Each structure stands twice: as C-alpha cells, then as structure tokens.
Length: 107
Image (tube, rainbow, N blue to C red):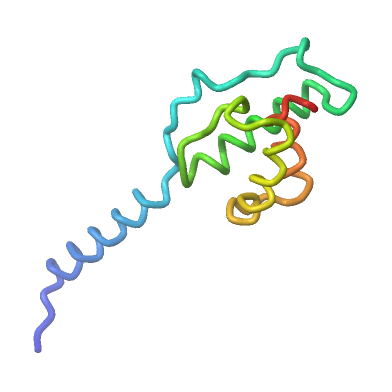
C-alpha cells in the first residue's frame, strides 16, 4: 500500500488544527464581571488578593463554562461550589483561596 504524502500531511494538519482550537483560551467577555476596588477591601482580603482572585477565576474557570457573577451565589455558597470545581480547574489551595476571596468579595 502506497501512502500519499500530501494526503497524510493534510490529515495531520487538520488534526493538529482541531487540537489547537479546542485547547485555546476561551474568549469570554468579562466586561460585566465585578472588578474589585479599594472600597472592597476587608479585614480578610486586600485589594491585591481580590484582583488576583479575579484573574485566576477568569483564567481557570472560563476554560470550561461561562462565568458566574459573584452575586449569583451567597458568600456561604461559594466555598461549596469551589470545593467541587477547584480540582477540575487545576487550582492549588492557595489559588482557590484567592478565587474564594474574589467571589465572596472578601467576606
């Protein structure tokens, strides 16, 4: 059986392109998503922690689903949501805490 190099290359190119597209970053619109300000700091969360949590939330959670507003769940509900989702998103415990601070607005 003779292999056609042009067809083999075309098939390989299609497969590689498909993988590249499926693994690319989600281009979720975050313009309506809560942005922490100095007024949002609490005894439990600095502005830097809130901002880092927002970046981690966008970078890790939007890969699999649309992003929820922090107001979609209460400060008491977010920890339960995060406990099931953080491992799927590949978040370390330190990064999970930052995301929790962002989603609970420092509460």
